[in-house]
Length: 382
Image 1 (cartoon, rainbow, N blue to C red):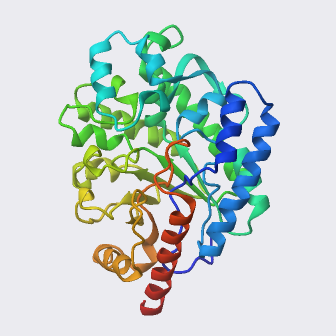
Image 2 (image 1 turned 30 degrees about the vertical axis):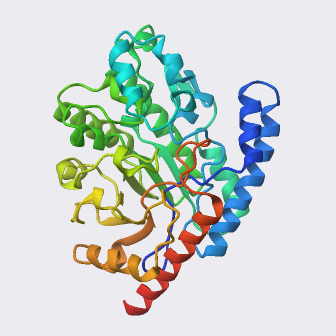
């Protein structure tokens, strides 16, 4: 990915889906249309997402995750041994129904609107998780591209539901070994396609350190956590290191945030990344993609990975941040990182769940234009 300017602008991944695509997604899931019809609708939507990013002046583009129902559960359509279930459907399976109901009560979203890819058999790739997305994206843009994948810890925790998974795997750890294999197969294919930036999403890491044992997360992955956060963090480092071992030829990033499922900031997690510093410093990625635009994220700090994907705009508001406000956030990061090490992006995606966007397309585009304006000003002064 040579030739990037200082302060390259990109997104974290997801983009609001148009109504036509949401309708096609629903009809395909219900078996009322063929997959090819859904994919055609997604092709059209991806081209529009790329057009908006390029017109805004984004340096590294994504496909907006238009083919995904959300950033992790989409794997249910692409992995053998999984079944897509709503949280209400999962309630029938869960042994600890009271604890699960308490989890649902913390959500600021209807439980029927969240789906989870649940492991119900031995997992294997049905084709690709994201390589087909990358192939199409490379056909419709000449810019460098970023592909986001759910990280191995997130995948393992979200898919492991003991009551459904134990017939296929003796433990979450055994499932994790197959998750590592699947992700390594996928990364190999993405590298062969020339993808220059691969982002692994691990937002659930913050749930381990910011909740003091009180589950407040949009991921039912919370169900499979040990009570000792240190054990879970060690497991996460092991899985991520196993996935990344030996790979070269691309920029690998790790995205960690505090939740992106509600515009009500009070329902989201709070806490400094300092609580995760020892963990993040051990993960062999080139870039950490972190949220910093809200007070919930705490002060900026330095980590071992040499680059920072700096979150400088909040995707969950209608406010269009002024370029000078963005620059002030970047200035705080420049106390810890040189200009060449800082990439600029929103805190999170603009639509974690396909049917619950955090912003509409026009607001998202305006936020990106302001971000690009700030980047140009920064390049002029550095």
